[in-house]
Length: 290
Image (cartoon, rainbow, N blue to C red; front, side, top):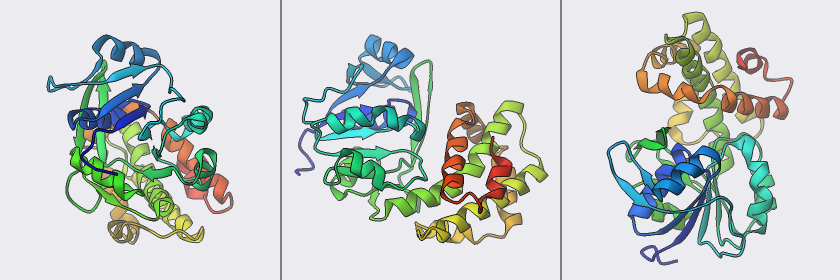
């Protein structure tokens, strides 16, 4: 692959994350098509562009379904884990050269590989904080530090980095994703509660979420996966009280609290995946399940 050539890219699920990738990749000169539905589809059809809160625009093509006949260089899948089964038939039928799944999950990734073909399946996770207000994108991309966007495919890590989304190669994406789920679920629940009540969580809530965090990291290890990246090894070893203090403080940060507007669906799905993996080792997670 020539990393400077114009790529034909479809993005399935242009919420905040998908729209951020669409904006950056289109600005980098790639031919980007976004696949949307509902109100998001209507907004994109009007604008024919990703529009940001800073008033910037990146022209994209807009479709209501993935064209299976097009040999996309990449189909980037940024739907929620709970939505992926609905799009797997279209992905399996697609002539795309690479299908890159990029969302929170705790399930074994082999199932997705098998569904679309092992030779073209890739995985990643966005180090991006993003949301849409009336279709207008606000986003912040992490470009430095220990928690950059991991991607299993080195070629696409380079393409994303060239587009301004700094990516690193992670060969063990299942361990990375499971580690991230253990890390992020307590924070998601804290942000949802803080958003709903417009106030930070209590100390007793923070302690319960910290116990769930400890249990999640133990579960990752018990299932035979590694804690990755290295920064997460350090975090997973924090005393429960220290984790509780971080969650308590985090729930009082306005940008984190705002992310709770997404609701409890995603952390609930991730906890359900953890419970399914080990129903007898997830009592603390079950106790905080929203």
